[in-house]
Image (cartoon, rainbow, N blue to C red; front, side, top):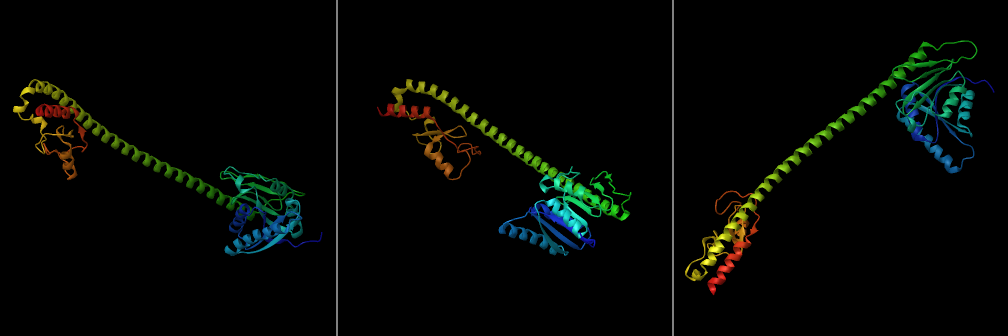
Length: 341
């Protein structure tokens, strides 16, 4: 292989899963400080025409992101059966100094992720030339990086930085500027994760408070409904009690009426046969909520004229429901038959 001039561009390796690799490109632009980028798309050999067209469309999306973020970018297509071998060949042939690639698919990301999950990423970290500084990201966060010149590995952690060093040949140490840059990036990622956790906590706390308020409101409404139902039930039971009492009184009076049946022609109707509204003998007596009995048609007309009070006491009625007074109607009919005979 001929000697290559070292390239200062920042290379970003992408695959067909454009949605997963988009976060790696955005991270590289925001955190590397570079202005020139190279998008590396690795695809398998012997792809059909439609698959190649799809690959070009995916790369065009990446280029559009670079234009929107105001950085220049070029593209490289690599056709090879092995993705990792294709990237290693690119590093060697172009003398790549800086490379950004995925540590794992975005769907595998978690806040506890501290090391590489992809077999391809693990292979490239182990086999890539020592001159290449590689950042491994996932879902917009730096997972770990392999610094150039000494294969220094730093895993991202919000509390501590675990370091391991593999040297080839003579012993060497990372430059202070590289250490500061990676420390800055890792601190920034740790802050992002802390803010993400804080936002999740605030959202859950807000949802909990809203649920508690809704439950409290529902409980108060249910208690009001129960109190109203209890009040209506008490009134209904009182009306039933009065009706039963009146029926008992009617039975006693009917016995007295039967004794005086021979003299009914010479006497007027009993007072309780008279409707308080029409002052006539009732044909269809009904009991109202005030406990008094009225002609059904007369009391219904009273309510239809938007009266909500008792015709006898002039007090407000709890309801306008009517109950047929069957015992009184039987007594009136018996009296009428006796009077006509």
